[in-house]
Image 1 (cartoon, rainbow, N blue to C red):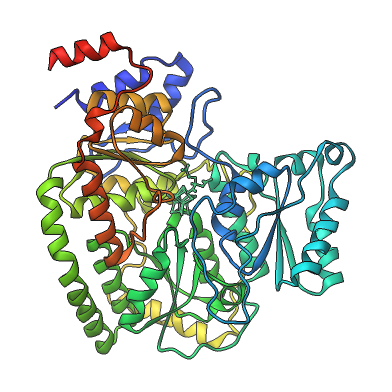
Image 2 (cartoon, rainbow, N blue to C red):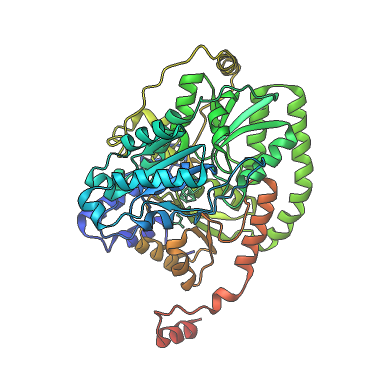
Length: 536
Ligand code: CFN
Ligand code: HCA
């Protein structure tokens, strides 16, 4: 029903001036050949004037990758808004697990930069902030984040951090993650990965006593997701050393090179770390997805296959069977109302893909989807990496020069395992991207604009839209339920088995209620409303 994907795309593009239309056209594709996806114009600058969902580099660095480490003291060097808006609004959960630990995430610390700092420089202010924070809390580590004005006036946060590290004798490091550093959050991820690698990974060589040791990379414990993943892996007998960076402590990160394997949930935000750890420690990695029943099962089985021990493979099957006993009746129940319903997802750099699995578990189809800031490989699969010539972020961010560290014997063992497994046909790099999994003739729209989203709703009336805070209430005023797939609104967890049950019930509730038919957008006049009613 409704216009075809091609017609929809044309109607979305129609309004734009010629140059903008040409640019947007490259970022809006009809998925004609899902098995060999067309090249998409991802990770490019948003045309000024367009209302985008994107955030900034500071958001990607402080807000996303490092901010969730709960016992580091995070100081935002900049005007107060940046610290304020990145203060737990992402719903990244954390709790202390040992009595001697402290959780600082309830605090939002900032140098509260004012005009006179812009004129005379803010380094003195930063130094003082670090000293005050240290005197008050005596943390293990302090991390400093530069916001736009800091880069513009040229404050040298790194020399301040070095000086204070020397003076106070704790680990203090800074991130040049000025908001404008890249075209989106994505550049901030890269800056964060480099800094975490340089300043934390490998600092603590204490051996970890466990048989199957892994790290979960790219999992930020939004709404408690990491806790559900941890619960399942524990049941299987798999030990997580570090979840980067959900509900994680500084010490766990410093020690996480002791693992035998990295599994990667959100590839976009942390692929750099996975690669660097593999180069230095020989630790292999592969992509997993614990969002969705099928994804969770597949990921557990792949981890078991990696360790290749019968006791683990059997245990994983037992856990799956046990958990499915709770999941199955819920799916059967909700499917009566959700089967055949349509979703559209526009989120970040991995969830617009991952959540398609959860919707398909409910018998729903995703008619249109797109990331805010992902790169071509997240759309087209890892095999396109060598053909990507221009990466908008890499112009600003240097790759770190990492060398192998053969001294670390236990880690060389993991490299040997990788080679043996590859010879037996195990695929480490089979990450396929979003487009291969989407149906033919669905719409793939990168960095969707407010206008394009409104057109999509007008023309296709999806039953639910997965999106973020910037468009949620516009969507709902148009009579369509919107689930925030960033913060989960007030819900979650949605990962793993228990998370899936939460999600199924929530979506069922949202799309089954009659309330959406009764909403009346404030911008609609009565005559319009009446003629629509008459036409029905
Ligand atoms: S938790 Fe992650 S899963 S890290 Fe990334 S790409 Fe953001 S903050 Mo919002 S919800 Fe989103 Fe992803 Fe990875 Fe979150 S889809 S946009 S930068 N994201
Ligand atoms: C960010 C954080 C964000 C924003 C969510 C939203 C998050 O990128 O700055 O736009 O609703 O998940 O909190 O992605």
